[in-house]
Length: 416
Image (tube, rainbow, N blue to C red):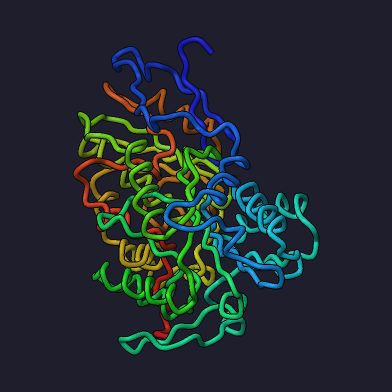
């Protein structure tokens, strides 16, 4: 459309924005991310990565017929159904039986539904597909105690497996460059609560590495996201080598220097239901805030739908705003509160309007409301940030702004 820009958000939705918000405004600027072209053939990239891994033998030689194999899949992996199904096909060719393969998904329920709908059409029905959630304690098995005395509990599918392959999306958004593979993402609720309270990133790294050793995990598969459902790269092999390589690829594609602040910033969270998470909303908001003048407006385009478990029985008593933010964002609630104090934030989502209002944002019910808001804003300068959850702002304190790659599991209000 002449004079307009199309910005993608959610899973396949598009909003057409005018190049100028009004007669007084400057021409719309768009953050040019990511650099690089998405992979044209993701299945082939997965097969190549598994056959020629970094600092590790081909996976076809790492498993033998009769082995029980578990794929530990992080819920934010783009094109997860293709990545996982191609990995499964590779394992079948190496002699693994469908009855000996378990896919364990850690992510949102909507993401799991979308994944299983696509995945089940691609592979034999004998493959077990399970969604892991930390509250499902009856499925956990004691593995061992860590060197610091913390118990390691994991799903029995991981503990009993002969070979475990974590499959995750590399974001490189932490200052340390370390994103946990297994712990606490696939561990107990208590472990995940402790992770959100911990201010020591080294402790998280040590525990994850120790858990991986206890489970015999020395190999991983990492996907570098390209925004939406695009994939920029796939790497497999020795966990440390994969982490270093994929983090470098991610930052080369998504890093950007801070620019002049704008009066109005429109930021999107794009991709499948598995990528429509509170963590990605938080990251997108923090990214937008880096580019917005004090008092400037932020518009967030998402299809976030999942009500946080901590709010399913209603907001904290007294509708204390700080308590609501803690319940939703855990230890990062204070950071979110600071952004909301500096900027009016409008959110397009599938969430109930009263929930959006309770966290201090103004709800938008439809894309046309976002468009109307843009056209009516008295903004002289404005910016669009596509795929804002992945943007890495050079010089930003990533650990404090974004947190780790873990989904927030706040402490229960009853203290349990």
